[in-house]
Length: 484
Image (cartoon, rainbow, N blue to C red; front, side, top):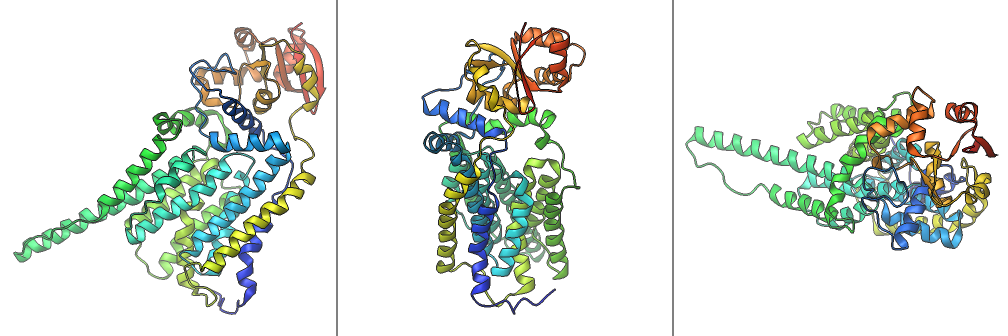
């Protein structure tokens, strides 16, 4: 292991703030993810007093009530969009990435010196980068990092951290990823309780063999369980109510079958390899210093590996779980002279100042970068506006979020909110998009009178060749069709 004690002075101290600002500026790009349009529409709808009920206000064929788990950032970014346009979406992503780098760095510095914290932060950002898009999920990550770090710290000292309760509430208002923080907490508390039971049993057995009274007293895990239960209650006490607690199961049921980011992870992707390297590195450091990890540490390491390998969307969370343990072990191995664990106030203020600077610099950069929405066919907007109110429209899945935002006069027969539809219906939609047998019956059953599809999609060709739908407009590889 290299001797890093030569890294001294203000250079190392400045790397943290530089990383915060640099990551934000490096993230500048036009809006390219299809999801922000859906969240802007959700924010617009909720801010205007709208509410989702059993009868979906946008999609006539939705089968389940949509629960807007990402309502808080949707409302905030929509308000910014009303004032600043698409620049606000670009700016929000840049600032979100700056905040993520900052919170990862700060939580790592609580348990490690500067070098170990910086190395861990770099690994976490690399493992998370593909997921750092223009979605509310990014803010969910920002809040999830300190929640996970708080539970890991609880494993070390068994202190009840009640600040986890309001932070869980805020995270639950931001994104469905909040539930994984609760899972980490349950694993830590459950492991500590198991350790306590085993220790008590061994002590009682030893006392019985020695003819002594068995030890009595509290193990302290009861207070930790109360913190966990309070976090669960906080999630149920958001404006969405107790139904929010069940959404991870309802959303996941469709996502795991049809959405790419819910599918199993491929180890061929660089960011996945970085996350796996963090897991292997932590295990290797334990072996190298002959450390016998506690039960909760082993459980979290296995959980992190499971998160990384189970699906694309949880790769960053696996990195978040490993990060505080890895930073601690790296620090014990390297023992850098230039910064002990625990972040001085001056260093915290420097990171905070870097976030503020990143937010300020992001304003002109976002304005220069926001050259208009990418991917979506804005050229068909006049033709969409000309469609009669309530026109049912079948569209390529990724563009449906933009449709909900840009063409509220239409009723899409399917959209990005996959949890709102029955799995059988989703499967039939996918088959129809490929013009498989029975496509005509599906389209007819939806009552679709228009379609917005890619030029070369099988369904677009079938609608033109078989049903003779007419081409209304072409733009950016899309074609708007209308029933003849």
